[in-house]
Image (tube, rainbow, N blue to C red; front, side):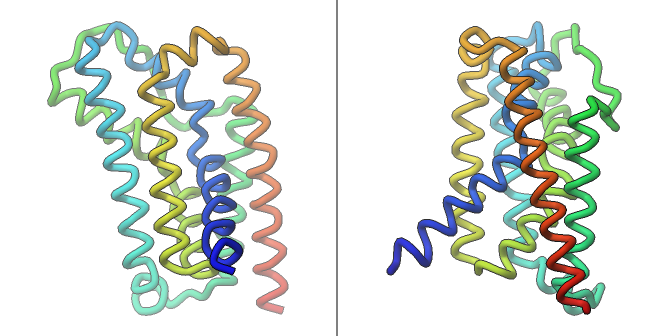
Length: 206
């Protein structure tokens, strides 16, 4: 019973969060934007991405209901529609290769302080963690509860930390083309999740 009520929902939502965070697309982007940096600088960058990204989603899981119910006074159906639209837009943008960030290759060596700032913006927000992932964890929190949502983001970020730590190995084994294809396939499923959220939101309102 416990497996069905906790572990399975956690793993299902882990896959959703992983899809939103898009590690297969962000690993080659991470490699490109940190090319030429010292190993200790790159390590600081991906550790900062994981720590700050997890902190942002954790904060929304813990206090997101307060913002929804008392500050903005919105319900779950409205959030589903908004979140679904965001997921569709983000996934469509990624499928078409359109980026809102003017990302350029960084050829100069960064200090640890510069690397930390660079990791926070733009690598963590909005490239890694954006409106799509925030709205997704809020919906998971409402529908599955705090234990499932916390477990899902914890496992998801542990997986991301592992992938970033072996980014060089992944790049050599699979190559940028395979990672690119995997990223685009994930976006199709994320778009489908967005469509489903919109349908559920409209049904709830009607």
